Image (tube, rainbow, N blue to C red; front, side, top):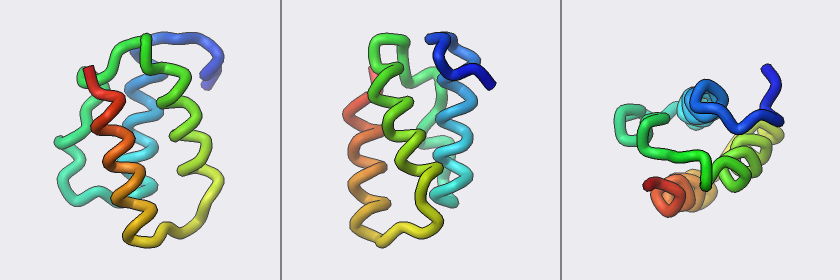
Length: 73
């Protein structure tokens, strides 16, 4: 996947990957439709952070969820 392009499909891919990696119980809370291309770079940075780690503490998961909330439209 070429994440250098700011597309709706890439946003959807990154949001889904973040949800799966964090094992969010209610993945419906964050949907690709909640994000627009103006938040793309920040979402990509968050995606890269999440993909780079194997495990997350509860406080890290809360911080990531909070940041996702801040990036919503």
